[in-house]
Length: 157
Image (cartoon, rainbow, N blue to C red; front, side, top):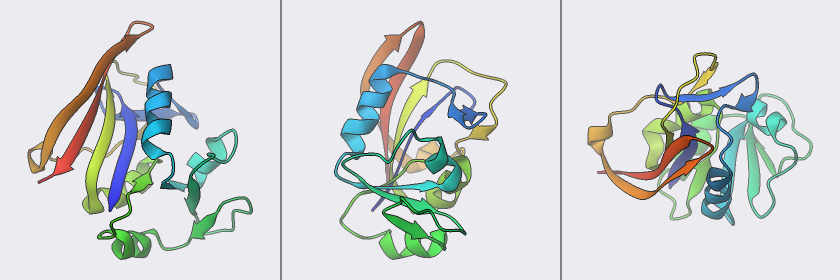
């Protein structure tokens, strides 16, 4: 099954200048705990923004070119998503914006850290989706450096 995981602002902001907008320590911990032991799929720009390969996970990169250190490079993201939509294994889409957009129709779960903030300088956004098509479960609420956030799991009905 396909799952999306991201931290988003009030206006669906994800990133700017090749980096995350919100740096929340608890969110990083949640991301690691949630994705550990799973396949993580990302676009080339997300891959290049990482300090290193994500340990304990199979790092899959969607790219037209070759990515030497990736565990797997997929050249046809839609084909990969179609082939894995109904597998029992949970596969996490971790960015960026275009990869989330392509994967959204296949997603059974969407794990969002909903941050109560906005950034007008954002240049990457999570795709808006019809929340009425999902059950919403609040996992945890918190605050870090004056940023209020909520971990939410959306499950497709």
